[in-house]
Structures are given as structure tokens and as C-alpha cells.
Image (cartoon, rainbow, N blue to C red):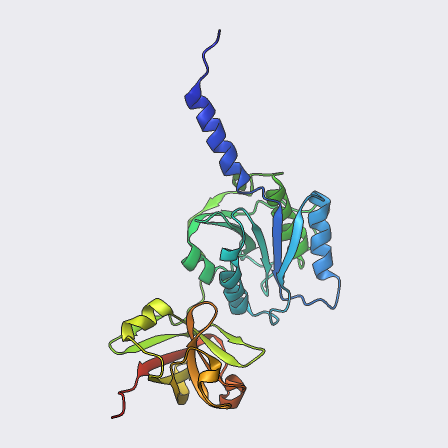
Length: 304
């Protein structure tokens, strides 16, 4: 009777478990294509051509045209809530067909992001971590017959590679050669404390309501020890030039201030944000968002 190599079986089991990370059959698409034409449907058609067992979802296709920064934010906002092994396709690619690399990033939590390395990975690489980065080998991972197409890598390279990875047709190692674990990044104001002032970026607007979100999280804000009702002074900057300064109470709910009045609060991502109750703060004060927008916030002394 042959002896069973328990150690060998354990290694095989581990190997299979690791492979499953790329095989949960979920693909999530993001782009700046909009839904007015067939571009998004074409990407999903290519994915289904690889395997009809895939589950295909949309993150958003309403990223403003060419806005790499917003693509970066939406990935960071969304990726953590999806199961380990989910494959994301993000195509905001004004440099399509140029020398920018086509890559797949594997996060430390086991998510995969298929995208051009053009700054799209700026935030998610920092918050989720880079386990490994691979360049897509287009000699293998490219839709058959698309070699002369230079302007729709979302369909011909990214959707195709993502579907092959998510379905288990290829392993992560078969995506292509490994790259140094660093990505192209866009410059922005990181959230920091400088004495009694916290500084940060305005990554996005809560566009439906005009609320202004920052990247200053609750942990950093707590270093100032604010209490509900304390007044905050915030200055908004664009390209490091002050746009406006407001004073607003730190509030638990929008209804804590009268209609039309400003407030500071923690948004759904537990980050410091500013709003007008039943109003549009961004429109009222001409505040935008992106890597070139920032804030400086301090607590005001309590009045006697």
C-alpha cells in the first residue's frame, strides 16, 4: 500500500486555493464611455465570448471624459466592498495606443484591476496595497483578429484579459511579465496634520447634492478632538490658491443646522465633508474636485 504524501497534498490544496482567487467569475466594468453607444456592450460581449458563466456588473460608465483622477477615486470607493477575487476593468484611457503600459494589479486583499497604468491606480494602490503588478502580454491576451485596432483596448485587451482571468482560463501569472510593485501616480494633497490644522484633498463632490468630500478620515480628524457643535474653519484651495473660507459647526446630521446653512460632517466613507443643509455648497462657492483641489481645516476657539 502506497503512503500518502500529506505535505505534497497540502501544497496542491494551497495552490488550488490561491488559483480560486482569480476565479470567482465576477467582472466589474468602469469607463468614461457613457451609455449612448455600443462601447460598453461590446466589452461585455467580448467577456461573454470568453465564458458565458461570468457575472458582469457595472461600477459606472459616467466618469467625465478623460478624467483619470475620478476613475482612481471610484475604484478606491468601490473595490473594498466586492468579494476577494473580483476582477475590475477600468478604462479611462486618453493615451490609448501610446507607450503607457496595460497592466493588471493584484491588491493585498486579492482583488484584480485591469487598466492602463496612467494614474488610475493612484488611490487604490495606496489604500489596498500592491501584492503584485503584471504587464499584459498582448501576444497572448488580446482578442483574436484585433491586432490592427489601436483605439479600443477596453474591448480588445482589457475586457478580454479580465474575462480570461475571472473565468480561470488563465492564471494571474499568465497575464504577462511581473513589473516592479509601483504604479504611475497623480500628485495630490495627502491627508496630514500640521499642528492644529488638518490638510487634505477634495477627491470628489457628492455631485447630486453639491456636498464637498475630503480625504481627511475620522481617525486623523479625531486628533483635533472635535465635539459636535464645535465650529470649524475651512479654506478651500485650487492650485494652492485660496478660493473661499467658511465657518461651519461639526454636526452629526444635516438637520443640525438651519436650512441653507453650512455644516461639517463625516460622510458615508467616514471622511470629513462639508455641505449646505438643503443647498449646494459646491455651486454656491464655486468649489470643484480633483487632484488640484485641497482644504485646510482648524477648530475655532469656543466662545464664552
